[in-house]
Image 1 (tube, rainbow, N blue to C red):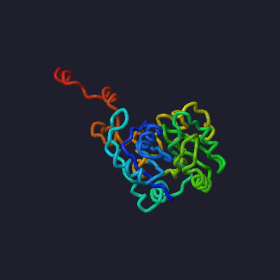
Image 2 (tube, rainbow, N blue to C red):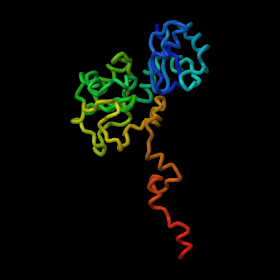
Image 3 (cartoon, one colour):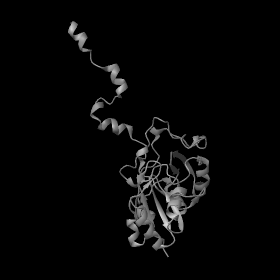
Image 4 (cartoon, one colour):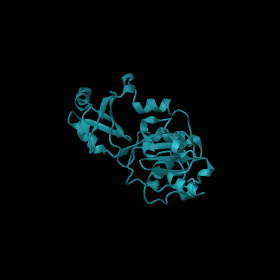
Amino acid sequence: MIMRPIFCGNLEFDARQSDVERLFRRYGRVDRVDMKSGFAFVYMEDERDAEDAIRKLDRIEFGRKGRRLRVEWTKQERGGKRPDSSRRSSANSRPSKTLFVINFDPINTRTRDLERHFEQYGRILNVRIRRNFAFIQYEVQEDATRALEATHMSKFMDRVISVEYAIRDDDDKRNGYSPDRRGRDASPDRNYGRGRSPSPYRRDRGSPDYGHGSVPNSRSERRDSPDYGRGESPANDRYHSRTPPRERSRS
């Protein structure tokens, strides 16, 4: 029997998988919880228990900030397909050499841990961890495809990870990424790219489901803001301001 996942939205971005599972266990046995960034898919063993959970949990306040949850059947699931496979076949159907990975433990996961999980499928050029998601770049696209098929929804360090194609390959030399730097980082926030370099994987348009609002595109923000028409920060404007009015009045 195909499990029907429940969509649980409006979670806090640091919500824990165990807390979500405990919430749904009040209404029946939970098979697994697939955590994303700001939402989750909950798989319950009995559909009647799931219906009960949806009725009781939709719109309740949850978490430290008391956010109102959005709990409903996953829309794609009406046709009997799993939401991850549906999303992968539509939004992420264009193959690339770089994979986008989410739902791993962002605190304890190191680049070497991800390498061990993915290197058996081909030569890896880059592993980059960005907060609660990561990018795995292979030397050839065929290896990336083989890795995606083998690792999507696989178990990794007590988590079930989600893997899909990244929108862009990490081939741009301007970003300064080098495979020689793999494995040096001591924490998930230290990655191969320099801190000032924008990520080449802006997923705002291609995959809004994952809610990467926590990684703002500072360049586009400056461009859209009428206050920064010269492309400079407010701090720099102080040093390039026009002559004060009192000096003009003395002339």
